[in-house]
Length: 150
Ligand SMILES: [Zn+2]
Image 1 (cartoon, rainbow, N blue to C red):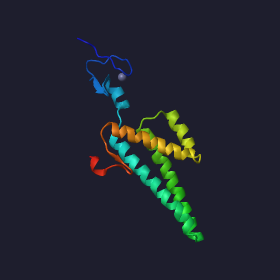
Image 2 (cartoon, rainbow, N blue to C red):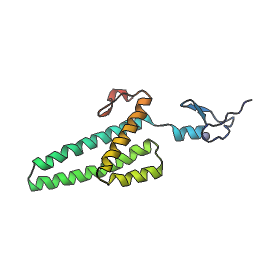
Image 3 (cartoon, protein in one colour):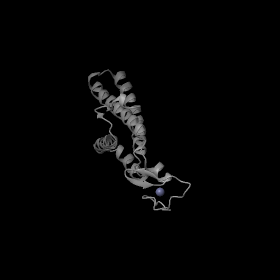
Image 4 (cartoon, rainbow, N blue to C red):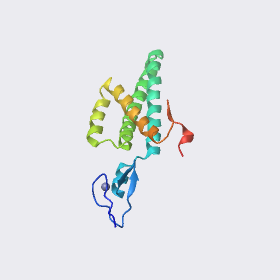
């Protein structure tokens, strides 16, 4: 009887174990669990990420037009809080996309650098879109259309 070899870790797949196919490669159950994306999670986190970014973008012009000091102070606090929330969602998105911890750590540093952070957001969002489109999701400006998410 032919023994299957995992394409990822080169380990022999035992008889009690099931060989699984992922992107045309034969992998063991362990590698399958490690490599398989949770597409619904990526889609939902990406939606939340885009929503928070939009809120931040809306608050910025309000800061200029609503010149009352107390309103401005309140807006700055909200802007800051959503900024932190955005960081956590950004990390959650990178985790769901299974980026390496070292890379995630670098991007977290980049999150705090002006201009660099905008490039990072666009880049990570672009990669999330590519992952989702590869399995047939239609991704719009605000993420995957709701009815596409089971
Ligand atoms: Zn394996």
